[in-house]
Image (tube, rainbow, N blue to C red; front, side, top):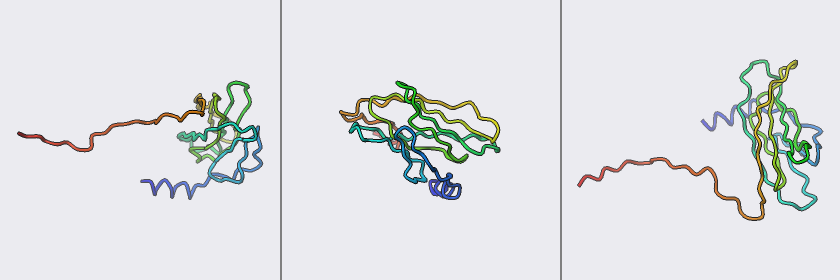
Length: 144
């Protein structure tokens, strides 16, 4: 299944991102939707991957991704992506809360955004493990 996803992403490549210098964010001609925060002030940043399921509407021509800094209302990322894009990677400074919004555009109308508020903690200490899960891998019959 993973090879199918890779083949699908290769075939339906996102459009090339151009001229992105918004509030310290650069794309550096990266076709993988990676956005890098300006690190001139020597603070720690977290690289965040936002993922979503694109709109199932057949007439969608693009999607808008906006990552808004909650403390000052300034967008960290504000970019148009291809209709097939299903994720983006960007950097957020430590101790920052952001709202990530993705909306679909069909050439005339823009959908309501799908949004998520996400907080980056103080990155001085290590972050805890995440996504802990447990699965039964075998059933052992212990007959006496």
